[in-house]
Length: 440
Ligand SMILES: [Zn+2]
Image 1 (cartoon, helix red, strand yellow):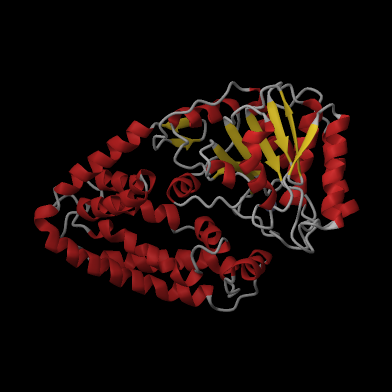
Image 2 (image 1 turned 60 degrees about the horizontal axis):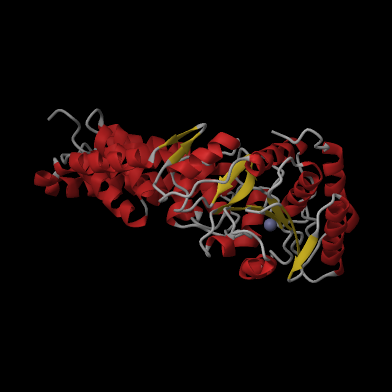
C-alpha cells in the first residue's frame, strides 16, 4: 500500500527535475553532483539526517535493518528517466511520507561505472554504526511495466518468498527465479551487499515484452506514473513489514500469490528420476531418439534462421541490443513470432514422421540430472516432464515450451545471452517427446 500522504505530483516533479532540468548525469560530472546535492537537500528537508559513504548519500531511521537504493548517475547522453530517475524520485517521496520507523535509503553514485558507489557503501557499512542489514533492495530500471524481482538467488527460500508475497505485489517470473539461483547476474547496486551474505534482490519494472527497449539510450526520457506508484507501494509494503526471515534457501518457486515449496521441488525431481529409471534397459533406443530429435531440430532451424536473418527493418529494441550487447540487428525482433511459429510447424511435422522407440522418461531424467548440476530449479521442468510423459509423450516438451516463445527468446537475445542464430538449439531439449509413448 502507498503511504497515506504519498504525493504523486511531487514524485513526478522530482523525475522532471532529474530528467529535464539536469539531464544526463555521468559519474563525476557536475550534473551527477547536482543530482546528489539535490537528493541531500530533499532528504534533509524531509527530516532525515544524511551521511556520506564515499560520495553517496545515505539516510537512516530507527535500527535501519532494511536498505533501499537508487543510483543517481546515468550513462553519457541518456537523460535516464527509467534508468534511474524514476527510482530516485520514488525513494525521495517515500522519505517524505513512509510510515516505516526502521529504514535506510541510499543513493549511490557511479553505478554505471562498475557499481562504484555501492561497492564503497557495502564495504564501509559496518563502520557507519548501523544495524546489520536484513534486506537490501536495489531499484534499477523502474518506470516501464509491473514491479518484478530479479536476481533472487539461493538464499531466497520458501520463507523469504512467502514474506515477499505477503507484503508486496512483486512478480518473480519462473525463468528469472531459476536464472537468479543458477546464474545470478548481479548487475546492479545490490551486488556487493549480496556477495557479502545479505539477503537482497534487484527490483525492476518489466514491460509486456520483458525488456526496456530504451536502455542506456538518448530516448530514455519518460516514465509511466502507474509503474512508479506500483513500485512505491511494494517498497512501502516491505518497509513496514516485520524483518524478513532467514531460512536455508530451499528451491521454492513463487507462483503469483502463492509459493510452490522447496520440498515439492525435491519431491518432483526424485519422482522424475524414478520415472526415468524405467527407460534404462532400453537406453539404446533412446540414443536413436536423440538422433531423431537432432534431425527435427535442424529442419526447424531452416525457416527460423531464414526469417530471423531476412534483414527486416530493425526495431528500437534490436538497435539497443546491437549497441549494448553486439547482437546483430538482422530483423529478429519483428520476425520472432513468425520464425518461432514456422519452426514449431516444421518441428511437429518432423516429429510425426519420426516416431521413436525409447522410453520418453529416460531423456527427460537425463536432462533433469544435468540441470541439477546448475540448480534444482533448472532440473524441475525436466523432472516434471519425466513424470508426465507417462500420460503423453508430448509432455516431454514442457521445458521447450518454457523457452521456445517470442518473449523469452527476445529477452535472452536482448541481454546478449543467446544470439538468434542459436535459438533452434533449444529444440534438442525436445528429445523426450521422441519416446515411444505409453502404448507399445
Ligand atoms: Zn541503472
